[in-house]
Image (cartoon, helix red, strand yellow):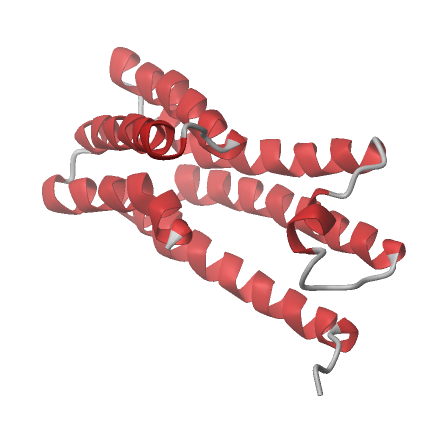
Length: 177
C-alpha cells in the first residue's frame, strides 16, 4: 500500500497529462499531490520519510521553475535528479561504513557484508543508469513518450531489477523448514 501511496503524485501527473496533454497542468497537479502527500503523512503519522521531503523539495523547485519559466525541461530533469540523489546517498552511506539496505532488509535477509556492499553498489549503478535513461528519453522522444516512460518504463525497469536481485539473493535465503 505504501508503494501506491508513494506513486500517488506520479499517477496523478500521468492522469492529468493523459487527459489534457498539458505538461504544465500535469506539473501543477503533481506539485499539489506531493504537497498533499507530505501533509497527509505529517498529520497521520507526525513524521515524513526523508525521500518524501526530497521529492517535495525537487517538485517545488523544478516544478516551480517549469511553471515560472514555462520550460518543461525542468520537470523532465526531476526523475534524474531524484535517482542520482538516491544513488549518491547509498554511495556516501557505504563510504561512511553504513549499510542502509541492510537496515531496511536485514530482518528478511542474512547476507555476508561483501554481498551487502555489492547489493548497494548494484543499486547505485541502477539509479545512475535510470537517471541517464530518463534524460535520454526526455530529450530524444516526445513529451508523451517521456510521460509514459516516467510511469510505466521506470516502474517496469525497477520491477525487473528487483526480480533480478531476488534471483541473485535467493541463494542466501534460509529455508524455514
